[in-house]
Length: 605
Image 1: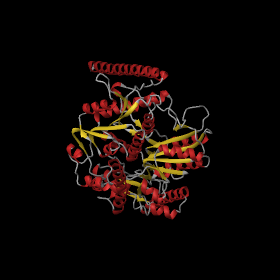
Image 2 (image 1 turned 135 degrees about the vertical axis):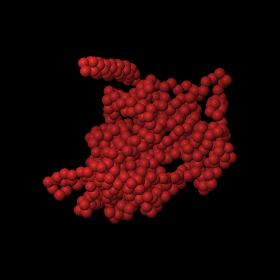
Image 3 (image 1 turned 180 degrees about the vertical axis):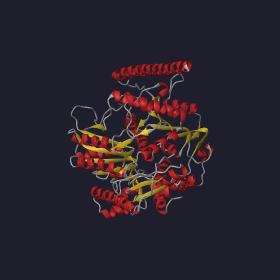
Image 4 (image 1 turned 90 degrees about the vertical axis):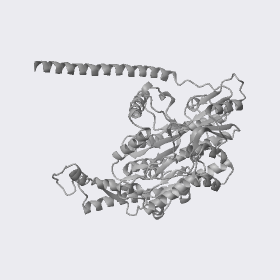
């Protein structure tokens, strides 16, 4: 026994010493990274020098967010390096800069592994087309063209593809997984309450049906065909053909092999990447010994402006008029938010700060959200109403601004969407699972207790709702839907009856929303900013982004903790697609109260 305790305590001591030693080493590593990062921060980002006869290398293989990270926070954590993102604002701004940069001769568009929303894709596509107005050329290349990548590539003067590659062009598809039978096998009853006439509010259908309802099928066909029509029109315009001719290629699945793409005129030629670079060299008329100067898009962010005359005059002079851009991205929740979650507290403060800043003359609310908590949406809506009373408020819609995303937008002076924005979904729902059967029959667990009042245990998942409780929850959901309708009617100058007729949870594309009066115009973020400035009566202005970024130390630690360790572990054990599903599960787990939320998340490939 004496030896047992001796060895046990020795083992414990060794464990504790090892733990503290590892902690010490970890601290030294973090301190070293911090020291290097602080040194880089004090020096500021090094400016990129663009040589004559340079080509802008646009590679869109990273996640693309509405608001890009600051250059100071583009850190390299070695083995903990996460997949940094690109900002749509940065991409569009720098394509515009390259348009007038005498040192940039053209764009080399590398489109392998693109993955972004349709509206984001449309804004980048428009920026590339605008770049071409300068008379400069665009060359596209990829080993595999997804449909989205091909949509972007269709802007190019020449499109090349790897000889053994492929062009995937066969139309858009929506597939929804239904869990009704699985829940029944688990003895879980999803108790669903929708707005009484919200037949299009299909977010709950996977829980209670085995297939799409007719209402959901009708609305999905409508907006999906709208997105496809926008894509066909853009591609057809680039090739000088009719949308019907392009659609026929997809209908017949005529392009299956690389040779098919050349035969049908969708691709200029099949080339290896080294051969494409030789084509670029020829375009630049380089000598044999001259290097091909490719400037990556992230590096070009820190290059000096190539504009000879800055007609927009958005310099950072003290006390200049400003247009505030409030970036609202992600699901809507109560409390604090971040770059991927619209927290009511954080965004209420951001809009209020822009409203109270006397140098800010107009506010643009950039919304990219499928919705979320109805209560949190109302908190943000109230702040937009207060802001609108003092200065112009314009909403710019991204890939999706639906349900709660439309809720926070509807009070604006003007709403601008992209043609392929997903919006509307004016409706609400609540879900309270009854897991009594699962606990009793599958796990052998039972529950019992006492209460002081009849409804004290209302909302428990360990039993089914009573008929009275169902009536209470139904009334709550209907009341919130009525409030939603009244906010939209007041903000859009419509009758409640009309809003209800196009509401009921129905999803619309940006083009359809324009016809219905849910949005005022079609365009991107830059157009929304220009409209906000026009409404404010200003011509020379700076841009100011909200929510304000954290200070250096806070941002650094968040980047290290989130982008570093989390992505490092994720890359070791999880596929990127699984990480996306993990985020969806986290969103569902954090749902509280009645929801104003889209029925699905959209990924265009």
